[in-house]
View 1 (cartoon, one colour):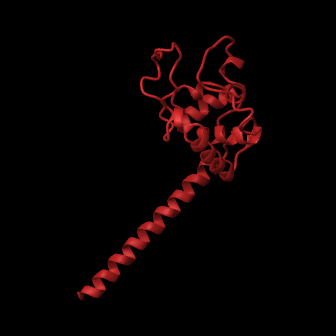
View 2 (spheres, rainbow, N blue to C red):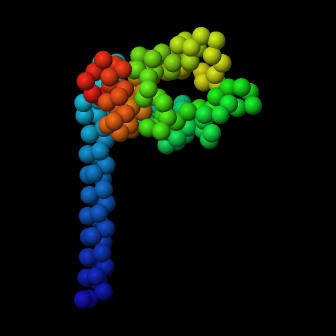
View 3 (cartoon, helix red, strand yellow):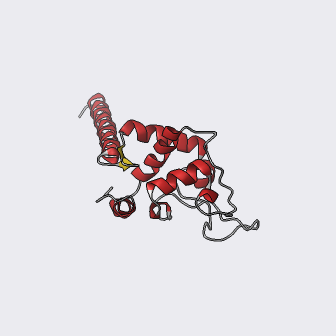
Length: 160
């Protein structure tokens, strides 16, 4: 085979692989929103994209870029406060209803657990209600089906 033909074949193969990966990624983000709800309202892939952006800007510095939380998140800090927990399936975020997650995010943890001292601020002066919902929908979209189903039951749903 001629070197030019080999290079063209390699380029075509690479282009095909990139296009296939982009297609799969688009399919994954569409399926993330499929049947996903937050506070009873359907979630769109646009909501998830906005939520991911807002999470990166407002939450990732404590909860991690990959929702992994701070190291040793189950052990108290020297201040007596708890580190930021993960929001992925390894944490406990999915153990809370949509309403509780919304309230904690908007007003702070103390809104649900009086006198709880936390480093997490309430975001009511930084994000709109719709932006808070988008962030939480993004987080929820990353959970495996088992966690979504468990959390859906807390919301009085049959599934997600």
